[in-house]
Image 1 (cartoon, rainbow, N blue to C red):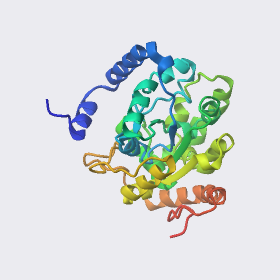
Image 2 (cartoon, one colour):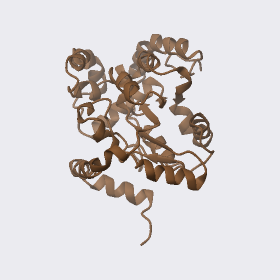
Image 3 (cartoon, rainbow, N blue to C red):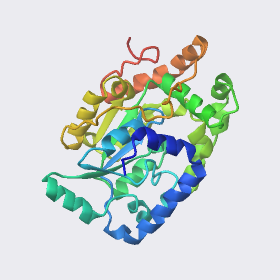
Length: 307
């Protein structure tokens, strides 16, 4: 039987209702929980940001011969699924014996990883992760926050999750998200759907989110990657990530775009210049704080960086 191509796999995924895909995934997890004690924990977390290339990086890295991807991309354990327990989390990763056998055969180490964009946003994710996998390496993809916010809005519109215009959605963000962080602190099981869905500006305040991860992980375990670099030169960017992870330099046959913007659909809707200027003014102090935190400017035109 011929192998299913990425294009065909993507078509099948798009045609399968989301609810059905989730049911199938949950069924596989339940079966694998029987062997959870014999399974690995991840060595690497891709923590976000949403709409910043995490799906593509998950596919690129997951195809590496030294790497095991999680059973599904967004496990969400350290954000919304923490109450499921460690056994549920382990069910998403390979058996330790299988992984050890591949390492011996290749005479090279192997890694397991997952990618959940909400980990960067969620106020408790870094602490929770550090308690379970303190040696893990953390990869944070960040994107010009203006483009990221607009892309998230377009994504929500495609999913029929956003009834407002972009201008109205931005104006309503503070009201929509009021009290969400406090609810998460009071109830670890709280889903925080408004925070996850309508955080157009909030997600682009990268410095305050990265600080949470730096509080629990040493700097040499954290890598910040620009989405723009991954999009413009995926081969060089992937090589840098592989060097950070200590695995061999390897590239997939092609660097396809695995985001929801593929198949001819625009990643971001057209936006008036006035809205971009408004967002630029909003993000400027946060990007300056990010540059100070990282020690270099990420060079995002019209978003507080240099041109």
